[in-house]
Length: 436
Image (cartoon, rainbow, N blue to C red):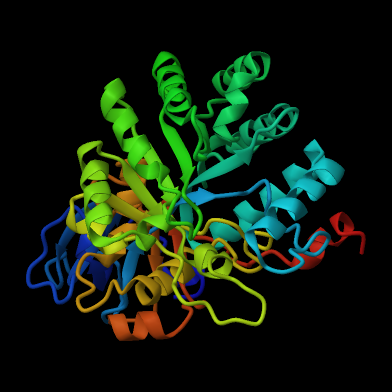
C-alpha cells in the first residue's frame, strides 16, 4: 500500500488479513500471539464498522489483501515541545549537557521567539508528526513572561489550522516559584482560559514546594483543567519531588489528571525509597510519561566519559503497580535533544530497547496509542474500535521482529479511511529562520 489507488473507491471496503496489536484495539480477537492478533477491518464511510477474526468479513465487499501486515491506530504523542523544535541550527547545545540546553534555549527564546518564528516551526513539526501517523499531541509551552502571551495564541491558531488532522493540547511550562508573582500568574491563568490550555510547570526542591503544589492544584481545580508537570529530570538522588506531588494530590483530593514526566531520579533511589514512592504514585493515580530518547541524551553526560546509567525512570515497576505509563518524543532538534522527528514509531522502538519492554511485548503497543490517549482524556483516539474513525497506520512488517528491526519509513497512513500524502517536509524550508 503506497498510493490511494491501492484502496477501493467504494465507501465500504475491508482491510483483510491485518495483524493488529491487541493492546490498541477494543475488540477481543482469537488467539493473539505476543499481543498480536489477526483481523479483518471493515471500513464504512471513513469509520471502522466491524472488527472481525481474519477471514470472517463479507467476501462480497471490496477488499485489500494485507497478508498479515500490521495495522496500528494513529499515535498519541503526549509530551512534546513544539515551541522549541528545530532551533538547533541557530542555537545548538555547546556540550550536550542539561545546563547547556537551558542556556541555549533561553538565549534563543529572548532573541528569536516572535509569533512568526514560533508559528513556522510549530507548523513544520506538526507536518512531520502528521506524515508519520500521529493524530493527537500535547505540547508544553515555555510560559515565562512575556512568552505566554506570544505562544499560546499560536497554539490556538494551530489547533484551528490542524483541526481534523491533529488534535492539539498545550500545557504551560514555568518554574512553580514563578506563581509568587501574582500579576504574572493571574495573567497566565487568563491566557490558559482564553486559549484552552492546561497548567503545567517544573518542580524544584525547596522550602515552599508543598505550598506551591497546593496552589497549583487549587488553581487547576478552580478553572477545571488537568496538570502536566516536568519532574526530577536529574540524576541527583537528593531530588525526589515525585513523592511530594503524589502527597499533594492526595492531600488536596484533586479530581483531575496529574501527569508527571521524566521522573529520572526515581531510578537512582535505594529499593525501599523507590518502592515507597512508586506506591504513592499509584495511590495518587498519577500518570507517568517517560521520554527515553531525550533522557538518554542528557542524563549522566560528562565530557570524555561513558554514561553509567540509562537516564530513564522505573517504567516497569510503575506499570506493575498499576500506574498508567506512556512514552513520548519530548524535544526535537533543539538544545535538549539534537535529534528526533516526532515519529512515534522511533520513540516506541527505542523505548522497547532502553526500557526492556520486550520478552514479552504483549502490551507494549499501548504506550504510544491507547494509554496516552486515555491520559489526555481522549478515549476516542489511538485505538482500533468499532465506531472510531478509520485513522490507521499500515506497515509492511508482519511480526514484532520485522517491526522493530527497521524504521518503517515505508508505512502507509490512513485518515478517515483514505490514504494521506505522507511526504516529510524539507528542512530547507526553515533556512530563513536560521540565517541561511
